[in-house]
Structure formats: structure tokens, C-alpha cells
Amino acid sequence: MAEQSRHDEPADDAGSTGSETWRLRIGEQHVQVLSSSEPAVPAGLTQAELKIFNALRAGWSDERIARQRGTSPRTVSNQVRKLFQRLSVTSRREFWARFA
Image 1 (cartoon, rainbow, N blue to C red):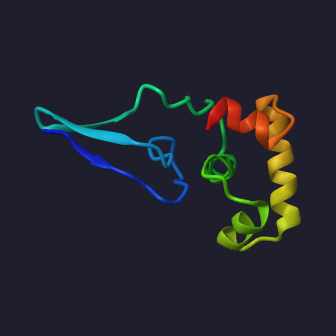
Image 2: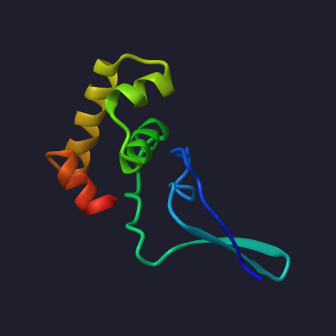
Image 3: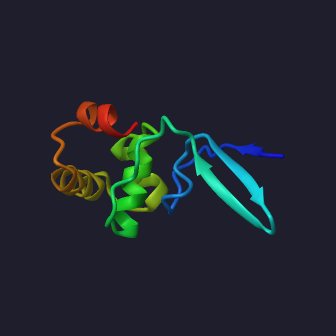
């Protein structure tokens, strides 16, 4: 039988993105499967970029991300800008259209 789990905060790894997931038991192994409507997390992101990516997908502001990470909003703003360049998006709206 599958059990459903949800996460309220951005996760550090690609397997826990704040989206709906299913944990399936296959033999002795548990396998986590993302819902089919979930956009993929781009490969090759650093751990810091992945944290920012997941926070943005959760709709967090730069200020909230900064508070959570213990950094300044300006630092987060710079990290978001660099992440957007890497993902070839120019705004949060475009980011959310592609990844949220």
C-alpha cells in the first residue's frame, strides 16, 4: 500500500521538493515517486542553488529565504539572479511558469 507525504518547507535534495509524492514499497525497498505533473528539477544544481530553487518553487520571498538561511536579502537576491541566468529565465513569473 502507498503512503502519501507532503513537505511544507523547501528541501535540500531533489527528491523532496514540496510537491506531492508517493512512497511505494517494492519488495524490501521504498521508492519515492513524484507526481507525473511535477516539473523536473534541473540537473547540475549545487546544494545552495537547489535550496534557493526549492524556496522559489514554494513561493518564498528573498526576505523569507534570507531569514531561513541566515543571510542578507541582498545576498539571496544575487543568488536568485545567478540561478535565473543559469536556468535561462528572466523573472519569477517565468520561473513559476516553468518549474512551479
